[in-house]
Image 1 (cartoon, helix red, strand yellow):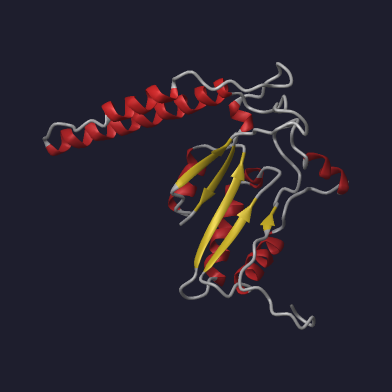
Image 2 (cartoon, helix red, strand yellow; image 1 turned 90 degrees about the horizontal axis):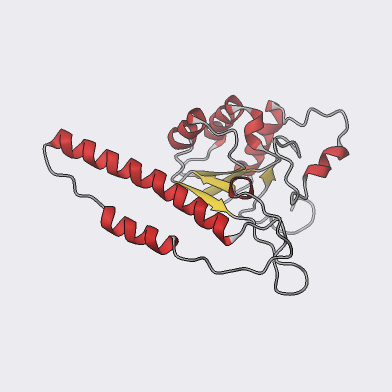
Amino acid sequence: MSGSGERAPPAFHVMAKPTGARCNLDCAYCFFLKKEGLYPGSSLRMTGEVMEEYIRQTITGHCVPEVTIAWQGGEPPLMGLDFFRRAVEVQKKYAKPGTRIENTFQTNGILLDDDWCRFFHDELFAPYIQFIPIVERENEGNTVTDRSIRPEQWRRFLIGIFDEWINIVLNFDWALAGWQGRSASSPLPAALAWRSSITATSTPVTTSSNRTTSSATSSRHRWSSL
């Protein structure tokens, strides 16, 4: 570090919160929402100048060929898609030769639409989405908090995701087979075997109350470009 006599680390991780604590949900478990009160009168929007400086310093400060630009909230999509398109342009501007830049993007998913998904796929080259359920253990005992997602909710969520995925896979395979003039090779048997294992009875979890949180609002997403 400058002036301290210590060498700077070759890599580091900094999370940017472009909307501060501003979010489109009011989740009971969120510790960060109340931080909005620290900035009365603020628009809670990162300016283009601050965004560019965050990216520039993050990239130039790394001495390794891989750099992570992390976006967290609040809820980053509230900044709008153009803000992040500009962020990608800035990353290209400051990228060193041979550097790979990864973007991680945490969101509750409520605002994501086709345009956002195309952006993740075409401009961030995001290969996957990660769903993180909220499961918190009470400080004492063998129970989870009342805001934790329940096994049945998580099971229904996974099955819903699976059903969407298998329809896409089958429709694509059949369409491709028809175009190529061949019989479709269906992945259905193996896929249904997996679905059957998911639909088995969930392991019960002792909870501190009957209150539940839906899987849609309990899940967080991490997008990465590789």
